Image 1 (cartoon, rainbow, N blue to C red):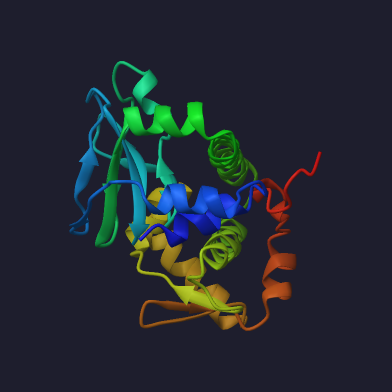
Image 2 (spheres, rainbow, N blue to C red):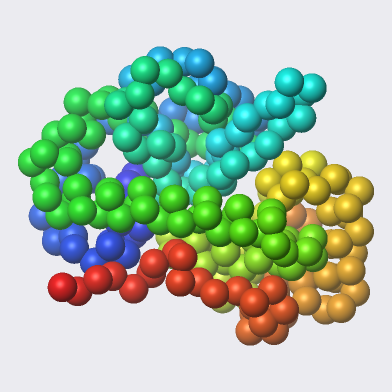
Amino acid sequence: MFDALIRKLDMAGSLTEADHQTVRHLSLRSRQIPARQDLTCEGDRPENVHLILSGFACRYKVLPRGKRNITALMVPGDFCDLHVAILNERDHSIATMTPCMVVEIPRATIRDLTENHPRIAHAMWWATLVDEAILRERLISLAGREASRRIAHLFCELLLRLQAVGLAREDGYAIPFTQVDLADMLGLTPVHVNRVLRDLRSTGLIVLAQRRLRIPDVTRLKAYCEFNPNYLHRVPRRN
């Protein structure tokens, strides 16, 4: 059940087989959540940490006039705010974007893992730092990349993140998002997203059909959006 999480945490470079077994033997129940459902809302008192086992979820905020802004995208193996139980209340909401298998981890379990399993604690801190790095890169996209490169950059990022947990091929993956979802992730309008996707298709940079993205030439797409994967920190520190 926890294979995606273990594959992700292994990228921190410190887990042993005993650590794998500790994670696998956690006494936690998973539940299936439909698409477009809130897991927790802004203002809630956080008690548990959500872990996504399958599907896609997001962090979001809604502006006073009703505009949704997606601030982060969670894929299988991702925690939703690992250390949120430190806070008195949530400052954002978390929702499923597709049907998701979700585990709620009590904060006592998180405390046990961080206090009694140092290698797992190290890997969990690594995961938190990568989440922060992804957010920084998203801010750079919003501030400095034109729309077509903004979308191409997101597609390149998701390719690597999904490959890391065994959910993408070398040249593509399932992409169940609507154009409204992409607009809310990237600070665009749905009409603009439609136009950009059409342009990326026409130039042969992507093939998008039946909710699946194929990238005919990954190197070309990365060059187009000047994609540098260093912020995903896939190479662990050895000393």
